[in-house]
Amino acid sequence: MIDPKVSNDIELVLVNESFTAEFLELAKNDFDYLSEWLEWPRLCNTKQDFTKFVTDSISDYKSGKSMNCAILYKEEFSGVAGFNKIDKKLMRVEIGYWIGSRFQKKGIVTMVCRHLIEHAFKIPEINKAQISVAVDNYSSRAVCERLDMTLEGIISNEERVGDRVLDHAIYALHRGKT
Image 1 (cartoon, rainbow, N blue to C red):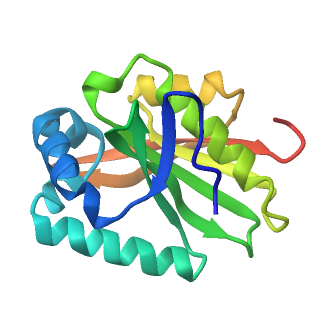
Image 2: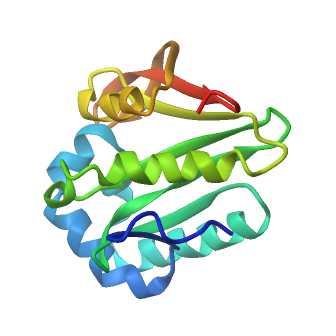
């Protein structure tokens, strides 16, 4: 399990149903912003949807496939981050995250991702931490650059979000280069 303490103000806790109301409120308030870059806000907007997300997340965590954590900023739910995929065969983790707009520009995501990368490299089978972001999502690309990740390339037609098909920039950091 990951050390929950990222900083004095930031904590990571495995997602669970206790965050349902806060998750739904934050996702609803930031629907337009989140839907610009992510497909899930269109698909996860009821208590039942979030319960399924939590159930699937817990199952995938137990089987070593992924790890989804709530980001708590000053004890307040502010988003989700973790390993969208843990692939020991390819020796990499894929980091994903989202954060509510009112929590942005505080360095939270950068600190959380740095913490996740440090945790990933404590797993003996993991040599690479990767983040895939929409090419035009300059805020997320800036996070990768602050983490000194290398831009490995651009993949066209990587994700459908609403009525758009997005290209992704793939950033990575390899063990020993953190």
